[in-house]
Every structure is written in C-alpha cells, then in structure tokens.
Image (cartoon, rainbow, N blue to C red; front, side, top):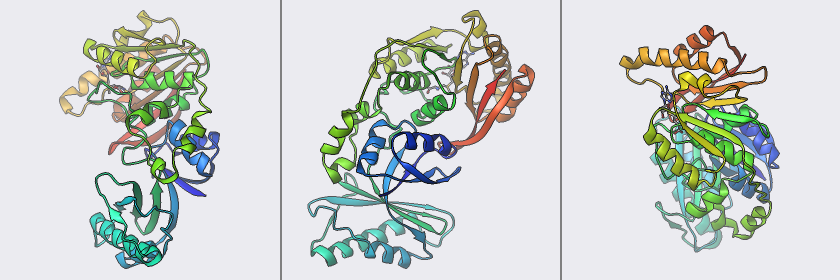
Length: 378
Ligand code: SAM
C-alpha cells in the first residue's frame, strides 16, 4: 500500500528515519516540502499513528499525478473506487492548493465532493452523506502546483503534533513534532543529560522524556482526539499495535531552566499531564549563567525567544551571545547543542563569538515562519 506523510517542512530526513524504524519503506522525500512518500501495510499505518513523534498526518495515497484543470480533478476523483467507504459513513473533502491557479481551494473541495458522490452513486446506488464538521472519513485533495495528491486521511483533522498532554499553553510554545525531531537529531542516548535552558512550557523536555521512556504519543492522543483510521478499519488494528508498547519507568537526567516562574509553573503542569514530572527537573534561572548551575551537559536542545519587534534586537543579541558563551563552558568533547531560531543573523554572530563549530544547519518552516536549525559542537 502506498502512503504519504505530512510534517513540518525541513524535517523530512529525520522523519524518513523514524518511518523506516516503524516498518515503512520510504520511496521519496520532498525536501522542504513537508511530504514523505512510502510503502507499508495497514499495521504500519496504525503504528505510525500511534508511535510516531515526527509526523503530523499519515494518508493512504489513492492517486498521484499531474492535472491542469478542475475538470481533470473531477475526472480523477470520479474514476477512483470509493466503495470501501461504508454507506452509513459521512465524508468530507479537505482541499489544499499551493501555487497559482485560476480557481480556489474551495472550488477544489466542491468539485471533488461532487465527483465522489456521483462515483459512489454509480457504483452503489447510494448517495453518500457529507459532514464538514465531524466527518467519519476525511479525503485530502491537495494540488501542489500541477501535481494532484488524493489521500485518505488516517489521522484526523487534529494532526499528530497535537499530542493531548498540553494543559498549559505558552504563547510561543514549540510544535511537539519539531521538538521530538530536534531530540532525534541530537541523538539523545541512554543516560545522557538533556538540558533546555529556555524551556518555557517544557515541550522539548517532555518530548525528550517520552522518547527515553518509550511512552508513545498515542497514549495521550487516543484519550483526547482519537484516530480517523478507527472509522475506516475498526479498533482491532489499534489494539494490536498497543500490544507493542513497552514503557520503562527509569529516571533520566533531564533539566529545564527558565527565568519566568509563571512559565515554570505551567511547565510543571504539562510534565504531570505527560506522566514525566518525576524525571524532569525544573530550575528557575538564567540561560546566560548555565555554568553556575552545571559542570557538564551532554545534549542541549533549545528554542530561544525570537524578537519580533525591532526594539528587542539589542537584548536578543546579548542573550544569544551570553547564552552560547555560558553553554560552551559546560560542553565536553561529545556535547551537542541543537537550536531552532528565526533570528539567524544574531545567532550566527553569537556562534562566531563563542567559536563553536556548526556541524549541520538547515531550514525548517514552523507555523509559516522561516527558521533555521543549528547543530553545534565544540
Ligand atoms: N520551547 C518552549 C515551549 O515549547 O514552551 C518555548 C520557549 S520560548 C520561545 C523562550 C523562553 O525563553 C521563554 O519562556 C522565556 O521566558 C525564556 N527566556 C528568555 N530569556 C531567558 C534567560 N535569560 N534565561 C532563561 N530563560 C529565558
């Protein structure tokens, strides 16, 4: 079966490794486009929904090809076989359009919906119900320039980055799938220490703790949002996948610093909700004075503030410079610092001042914002 995943653009290579570790056979990655195409059976699909930490959505690929017009889209949808949808189920088309066309994504949704209803009527003599608010079956119709992707959404309207453990909402919180990807990038090994020195609501710390403890995001997700594939294939697949859960309750050396007590209070609530409060230590402190708190740290993963307003530039420059100088004093030969920021110029100046080595650097799109990820060593 052909599948494809959507994820934050820029993190495709990390997602590829995760998909392969969970049984998928990756065919193609679209770098910086947030799409990975792969092969796998229904079990792989269910496993990815339950265990994946880097993916946002998993779709079964029904069609992929070039089209030129709305009429072409109608033809494609009309000629697909939709009889696998139970006749009592409702459906919705979720359209997406990237590039320039003389029609809108709403037009795509309308035409595709009409074609699906007519196709079903032809094959089953039943008029399938549309439910745009709470559909049983979600069909993705994505036109990216002139490439059309038609996919059966197995995840649901609420993508996998919404884990379900967040009870405190930091205004500038990091997307959980990006946080997990950064921890994979840093290769957080058993019994190493992990520090987020500007931890906010603890997304990076929680994702690090969940990875170390083998706690699948699906545990929270199932309780709060469920999965779309249950409407399509029943519960048995999910129960089967859940037999593979193997949590360990060891404690790990995971630390978070923030200078704002209110955020630390929120971080504590999120940690409790994610069942990892006993393995993460929160410290009220200053990221420019890490060396006053620690002697040595193995892995630092951080999402510092980005100054949206110009007036803040000077303060940010000082923060970035002093943070890197301080972190350098606690690094050893094997320490890694992973940082995601939109303030690339200031951060690169700070890297040069601290004389750290850039091992890797790449673009990541985060909520419409262009950011860069840096992998630094001594
Ligand atoms: N990754 C976090 C999350 O998911 O909630 C959000 C981090 S937010 C972009 C940046 C954080 O850095 C804020 O919570 C802010 O209080 C903290 N911060 C700013 N300057 C700091 C400093 N000198 N020391 C420690 N924390 C600092």
